[in-house]
Image (cartoon, rainbow, N blue to C red; front, side, top):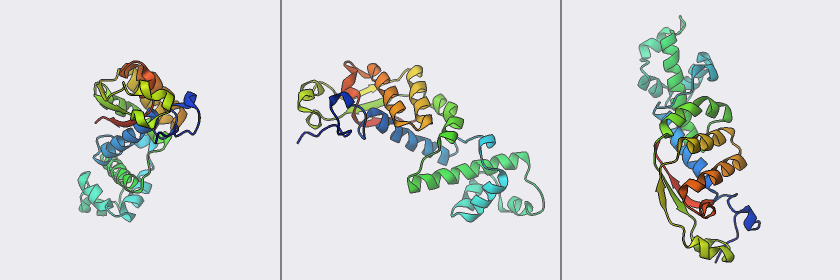
Length: 211
């Protein structure tokens, strides 16, 4: 049975809801960013991070904290020395790395994502990894749209494209805000790069890319 748009509204609201390209893109970007943070390929800078004492408290009180510090190059002997002296600048950078690695691991496990404050701090790192990457976009099935839109939707098919730098910038900037409406709008603007008419890609089943 054909469904109504998930917004529950008329066709003019097409592209704003759980199947909107912006929503699906945002979920994929969240997953990519968390994986990159888990492997320390993206690390929020220390000036937006908790201070090193708070980070150590987190690492020492959470499962996996000591392993994260080991991976960041902080051996147990060095950690014991911090009971009587302040970590060096290099050690504080490694603490920051271990903290975000563990934080991202726990976010992924619990279904949380970085706050807009952290997204803003890592946005340029995300963009640099995104530029030039290819993206696969699968539109919603024509049988799942309004009857009057089914004929047009039948012509839509999966596309693999390389988004322009402008589109990556606008999509990531919208993701930073955490505003779903802004992300949907950015996706609609980007859809003109996918195919014509662009409206066929306002709602999608899948958006795939690797940063």
